Amino acid sequence: MAEHDIYPSRQALVKCPSLPGEEGDAVRLVLAEMQALGFDKVWMDENGSAVGVISGALSGPTLLLDAHCDTVGIAPSVPWQHDPFGAEIADDMIFGRGAADMKGALAGDDLRRGRRCPGGFWQDRSHQRHGAGRESRRGPRSGR
Picture 1 (tube, one colour):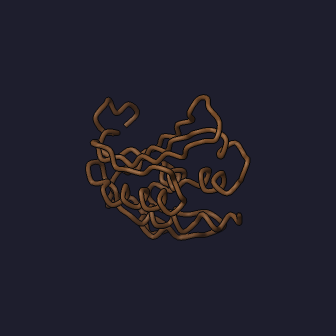
Picture 2 (spheres, one colour):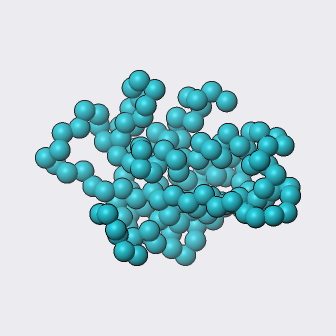
Picture 3 (cartoon, one colour):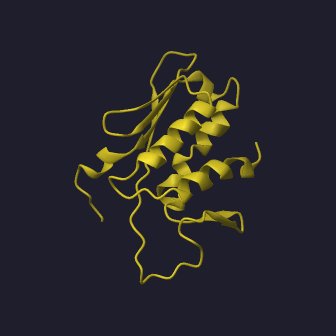
C-alpha cells in the first residue's frame, strides 16, 4: 500500500474540529472508516467513543489500540503557518490541529496496513480499536 493511501482518512479527521465534549463528528468519521475497512464489529459506546473489533483466526490475547480524538482549541494569538483545520500536506507531512496528537494514529494506518496483509499478525490475533470520545475528559488531565 502506498503511503499516500492513508492520507485521505487522516486529512478528514484533522479537518474535523473536536473540542472536548464536541467529538461526535470525529467519532462518526472513525466509525465510518472502520466500517469501510471491514471491521467485524463497529459501534459507538455509551461514552460516545468509537469501538471497532477485528476477530482473529487464532485464540489468545486480544490487542487493544487506544487513542483519543479530542483536541485543544485554537488560541487566537498563536500564528499558524498552515490552517489548523486545513489538513494540508507539505513535505510528506499533514499539518493541522491533532495531526500528531492523536488523529494521525487514530485514522488507523496500522490497521489499514494490517487488514491488507493476509496471514500476517493482524489477521491472526483479535484486536480492538478504540477512539475515545467523551470519557477521555472524565479523569484527571495530567500535563494539561
